[in-house]
Length: 169
Ligand code: FEO
Image (cartoon, rainbow, N blue to C red; front, top):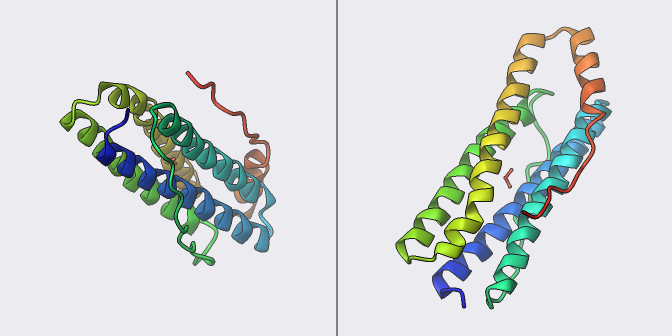
């Protein structure tokens, strides 16, 4: 049986992951509105990944005899200053999420919930990847600057991303 404090904290994180999904979906809609379909696709796939993050926790709470409680999801930002801004935003957002995951691990350690410490390691590793991916695209966009050709090529590349659900283990 999961400790009540842990259950509440994971429930909050489920909401945060669903918010991330919502935020990235909003970024996808923004890119669609400025005619960058590849970027729109990339964020749509990212939104799916975030939903997966939420559902993995959803299942875990149930497995541990806890109760998933869903709350309202905050309205995401709708517009950004330019085509590079959502990636700066996304990178900063992922750094914030890493902090949240670390707080969850700290709580699990504090209450000696080893199963949850173990479960959260998947997220610890995932955050390394999430930050690395976001930061590398921020870097590419800086390099490209206002070069329309470069942007066109990057958009094409981003359009090839597909969602592959990670294996459960
Ligand atoms: Fe669920 Fe992008 O962290």
